[in-house]
Amino acid sequence: MKTQSKTKIKTLHSRNLHNSNYDFDALIISEPKLKEYVGENKYGNISIDFANPKAVLTLNKALLSHFYSIKYWELPTDYLAPPIPGRADYIHHIADLLADSNNGIIPKGDDIKGLDIGVGANCIYPIIGSVSYGWQFLATDIDKVSIQSVENIVNNNNILTGKITTKLQPNKNNIFVDIIQKDDKFDFTISNPPFHRSAKEATSSNKRKVENLTKTKVTKAVLNFAGQANELWCDGGEIAFLKKMINQSVRFRTNCLWFTTLVSKKENLETIYKFLKSVAAVEYKTIEMKQGQKISRIVAWTFLTKQEQKNWRK
Image 1 (cartoon, rainbow, N blue to C red):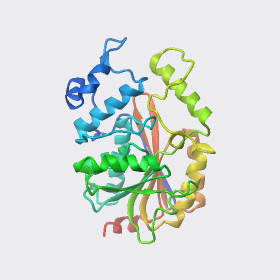
Image 2 (tube, one colour; image 1 turned 90 degrees about the vertical axis):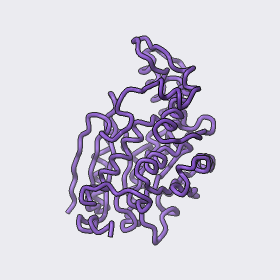
Image 3 (cartoon, one colour; image 1 turned 45 degrees about the vertical axis):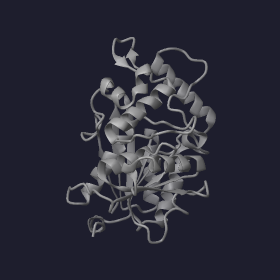
Image 4 (tube, one colour; image 1 turned 180 degrees about the horizontal axis):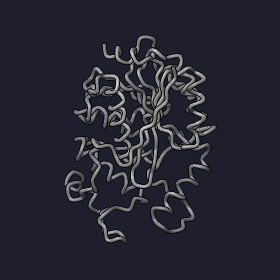
């Protein structure tokens, strides 16, 4: 029987370490370079200019150092430096998802293995998951520079030793194929897919974002969180990527407990549900996340029955 449920979240997850306002004094102690970007905004609040990519990058370094003991986090020029609070929310909701089939207890430790599809150069999800819950991760990407960056981050932080391995996806048309092997077992997969259909659409979207942040008209968009083409857009956009992901997940139905992905556009949900029904997913659910005015959502699906989910840990 196929079931669907929906959980609405009004604020960041209760276990999210970033639920309160940024303590810039503490963050500057962790990352002194942040001081040059911190000042009073036009509302009289102490903050940074979130339209400035260097400021955002430095804030991320401070957050990773202060909350996750990550002392080395360097990215190649112009690669995506994502907002960390929202990324942390995804990981905490994955923990709740795993607890649902584990008698309400969040499973921790290196027996739990996640697969990050399109890890990017930043390694954010594996960092937060391994530090917060002790999980292991396989981090994959189609981009060699991203894989090398992740390996540099892991090799330069002792807290990540033995927690994160990498694998280059050799075929950009594949997602799980060429990555998941016959005997592999993953407790979950995560993905933040490229949701634009073209470079032009990505640029236009970011221009609007910068204008909303600065409340001024801009003629040229600056990517405040940066990002390469493969991180921001793909042919067919989000829906084409997710259709491919769902279709390929069928082949590995017994290799993974929960397949999950972020879905940026609410209007895509109905189409995604149709895809999931067409491949006979046993259960799927949507988890809404909210950070300020921004609403995002996770779609999760499994091919295992409730009993098989409970037996997974065994």
